[in-house]
Amino acid sequence: MANIDYINALGAGASFDTKSIVESLVQAERAGSEAQIQRKLASAEAKISGLGSATSILNILKEGAEKLNDAKDFNTLSLSNSQTSAFGASVSLDASAGTNSIEITSIAKEQRSISDGFDSKTTALNGSSDTTISISVGGGATQTLTVNGATLESVRDSINTANLGIKAEILDTGAASGNFRLQLVGESGANKSFTISSDAPALSFSQLQASSDAALKVNGVDFTRSSNTITDVIQGVTLNLNSATTGTATLAVNRDTSTAKQNILDFVALYNEAQLEFKKLTDSEIDGPLRGDTIFRGLLRNLNSIVLNQSSTPGDNVNSMSSMGISVDKTGQLLFDDKKLDAALASNFEEVIKIFSADTNDQTRFSSDAAGIAGDIKTLIENATASDGYLTTAEQALQSRTSGYNEDLEELNDRMAVIEERYNRQFLAMQSIIEEMNSTKESLISSLDNLPFTRKD
Image 1 (cartoon, rainbow, N blue to C red):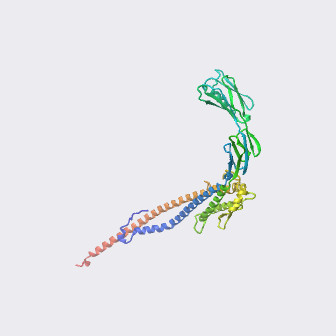
Image 2: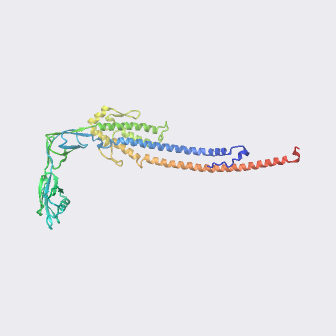
Image 3: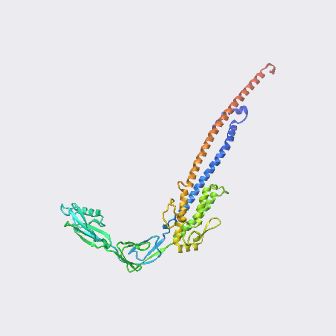
């Protein structure tokens, strides 16, 4: 809009402020359109802010659900081992709480054989002739390897490449002579013993250690295994044997429900806080920015239904949050009965896992399978906040609309500038007329003053 008063001289002839008059006329024409655009702009910006707040709140609530949506989130079993030097142990979700007696008589061992010493790793072992090496594993068929220009290095490489379950490695003992020796290491277990022979007179092997099975007694039952990593003698428990036990060891599997309980209570607290914030966003009495958003209200109804109704994966004794001591008051806030919650965790822990996680892990939002309370909440929120979800697309649409409103304001400013220019030109024309009239008046007065009969002398 022009800021120059083209007709400031008019004040002398017409006795009024033309600049103020023009500004008032332009403002009168601007006011209605500008107020309408500003109202639309303020409404859109408020809703954008509301959608952003709703997304943040939902994402915080989703973080709480993510601590309960996988069965592995409830894997809070702990182990107590009386002889940790003899064996280690780890536990998975399907283990059962209880005490186990373990007596290890022997651990599984691998056969180790070693060659005589050589002064060099690269000296030919059989002159210029090829070397034939014969190997049999576990009493099976003999495998024949032909090594051209055999050296310790080429024999090692040939055995390793054959993938017979035998690892060949060259050791440097540091002796003054004959310090290089070829060691062969088989797999553990009595049935993995091997024999090896060569037609090179210089290459022969002696056995350092024979292969053998692990022998142990678990809860009164004898077991023999070819590996020291044992997964099938105690359900859900992996044993890693290191040595024989001193007498009988005790391995206790303990159920710890404290972490699961705390995660459930944390989710209850997050849900209650979210409900208070959602009420502010949708309350018409305080002009909540999402008060008229029916889609968002539908999203909240679905969320509340998941939390308050029966789980999509119910158990026989625990099928909802209310059946484990979590209820809702008249304001929509969740309350919990500490004793009932502890009883559900103690007596029906597997069903608690089921109603929250459907006994599954890592379900995605694209799965159509029931996912339990926490899993369904996570899916609902992810669908709403994803790049193609309502909260995201609605905000993008409003951002686009806001840009349009700002363009409307710019167009209004341009239009008002033209109108102001028009008023300035009109007042300038009026000034010219008034100036001509004033000039004519002064000329007439001068002429009349100069007439003979008007002279006062």
